[in-house]
Length: 90
Image (cartoon, rainbow, N blue to C red; front, side, top):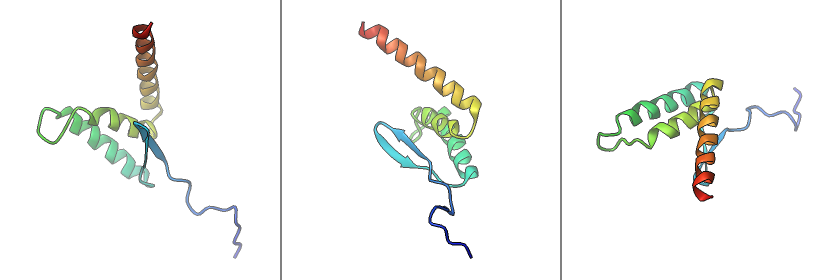
């Protein structure tokens, strides 16, 4: 058996940063996709008690780690929001 100190049995855990807090995501890609999808669909039902519209952006954030198209969409929205914020500040 070769026990190398450099070899890692698992890749490093992914983290998302929300409002300055870092949250660890599950190691399983399937679980991350399921959580992101559930958050988006739960957010669509945000008018119901317990669920909220805040779930949609969080679900998109989780899904953006898995899908390039969602990552591009998130990046475009981030750039648009930043430009709008700067315009209002000026």
